[in-house]
Amino acid sequence: MRDKKKGSRILICGIVLSICLCILAGSVILHLSETFIRSGIADMAGAVGIEAPEQLGDIMHLYKSGDGLRVVGEEILGQYGYGRDAYSFVPVWFWAAAYAVPFCITLVMLFSFGLYWRHKAREVEKRTAALSAYLDRIMEGQYGTLMQYDTGSALEDSIYKAVVLLREEREQAQGAKKNLADNMADLSHQLKTPAASIGLTLSLLKKKAWDEETKEDIGRMEGQVSRLQHLVGTMLTLSKLDAGVLELEEKAFDLEEMLVDAVQPFVRQMEEKEICFGIQGADGILLTGDFVWCSEALGNIIKNCVEHTPERGDISIVCRDNPIYTEIVIQDSGRGFDEADLPRLFERFYRGAGSSKDSVGIGLALAKSIIEKENGAVTVENAGTGGARFCIKFYHCHRIST
Image 1 (cartoon, rainbow, N blue to C red):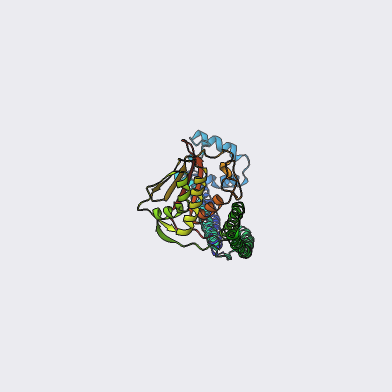
Image 2 (tube, rainbow, N blue to C red):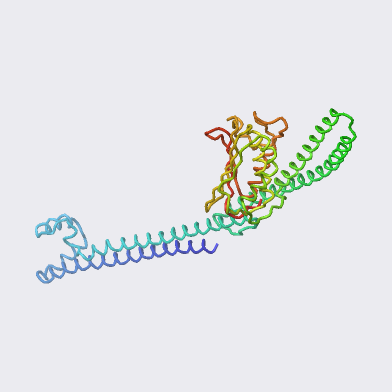
């Protein structure tokens, strides 16, 4: 408000100063004109009085009457070299003043308007910076008002209304996610107990089974129960990630150690399929994050590669580190993915054309969610030599809270 009054004062002062200069210039020019005209008449009267004093009274009487004098006077002036050119009568200084005064007035007006628009531009810049800072504070979760009344007040009011609406929607969404996570936790607890009981009962039945066929049936049932328990745990983890309530550590750990831990559950399966496995470039690289959950995420990707790699195939992990991010490339020698499946591989419950019959399509979705929570990104493509290539990048900056 104070800046607005200051700008108005600058403009008003400039206009008032210009008007005063115009009035002053008009008065000066009028006075000079009157003086010059009177001086010219006085010179003419003096000349007549000196040369023909006896005719001075008649001449002055005739001058006052003014009947037909102008035409005759123009002819006489022409005879003595005084044409219609004004410069023949008016001195140079008079014309200089006549041009200089309006020029100065124009400069004053332009200068005043220049100061005014400069002030307005600075005011707009300050207001824009204030609104920008206001939005930054909103992004940081500091809600409030600027409480200013000017040309930007309408915009500020609209921003504030939008902020309030977004804050309410954000709080509602967070509440809904929290309720979902709580419900999933309750459901998981309710499912785990009977699943564990069923598993224990199946183990007892397996010991009492009297033929191999019954034992095989019980073994298949145990596998399904184990699969159900894993699915419930995975769904609970995903719901916590969505709700932002999954607590992740932020500690430095050795990359190679984490990769060895991630591949450990699949060593027996790779040995049975005679898969050649290797890790390159991970020695000496440190990552900051949650060791257990990073291992879980990469383990799901490795599991996918193991399932799609044929016997006596290859799986390689190549690591690279630079000042911006640490890159982990996991590649297998399988047949790769169908092009139609690539955009949807990380969707929940999506099963591509080459998925195994036991897959539920949730492992890659969980891996992607964890990696993104750890301030990373994951992409997948078909390698030029065949097989699938997963590219994981962990960026070297602080984790962004959600």
